[in-house]
Image (cartoon, rainbow, N blue to C red; front, side, top):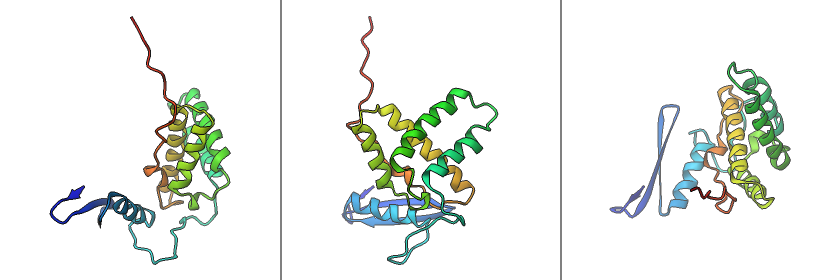
Length: 171
């Protein structure tokens, strides 16, 4: 939000019950600072020390998404086969674009680049959204298990030029 009295923008986030506040001259500067706090999991990081995964192994995005589908989504009691099929379809696009990247090194920019490439390939906005949701759910699952300590899909945005469905004309 904008603070007209001090002519600056204010952003805040709560991580594990701890509130973090940042200030900047522009919205972009404030958002960048918030993303740094999120990437650091609320812990300030010295320059040049990126946040890494807390798990012992280096897991790629492909391994993360396929493991989430196999071990979490497919084993839920009320999950229909069509839900699993849609997630597998979305996973195919995720794997094609960012599958070889270690999950701990994945950035919001890389996710947005994937979404832009999907849009450029003529895929619909719904497919982009399903792919983003699938990746988001896999990352949340890894976070719950303590394998990742950042949530890069939270701030990713589908390109506005992504083709949507045409409005229908009915009588």
